Length: 165
Image 1 (cartoon, rainbow, N blue to C red):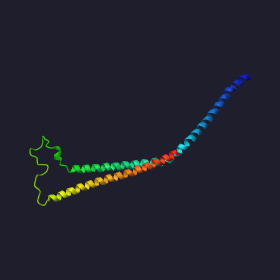
Image 2: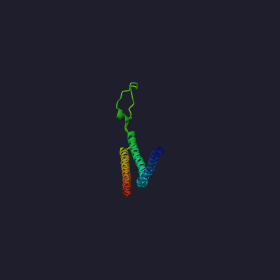
Image 3: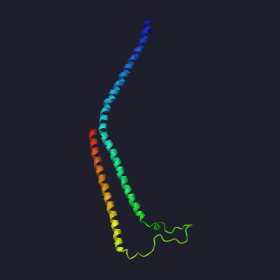
Image 4: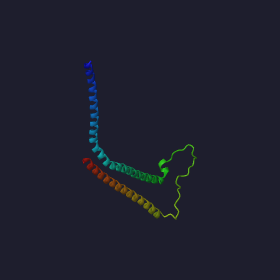
């Protein structure tokens, strides 16, 4: 009977040993993971501010780009307002239209109060103003893009220094 009792204890003691090994192994793995991941967490928290600033800068660049596109679209709309639409369509036959149509632009001689030289000067002034606005908008966007590029390069250098530590 004593022999059976000893044989019965051996499996129980083996189970206790494996349980202890499992517990110790779990603790060992947890501390090893913590030791490995803690420097990475530290670097990540240091870079987090830079990452957030990139998001803000990306939003600012997107808004700037959208403003530039909106500005260009407004210019196109302004140019299209002054185009003679009949020039685009030509003579398109309309089945339900009356037989005689008045011309799109009246063909009358200008009155004496209109001086062609002054009108030409005004048109030229408006055209030159549009060119100046285009150049100033282009200069503004180029300058802003350069500033964003410099900031990005500085941030990349800082991140590289942090990662190399």
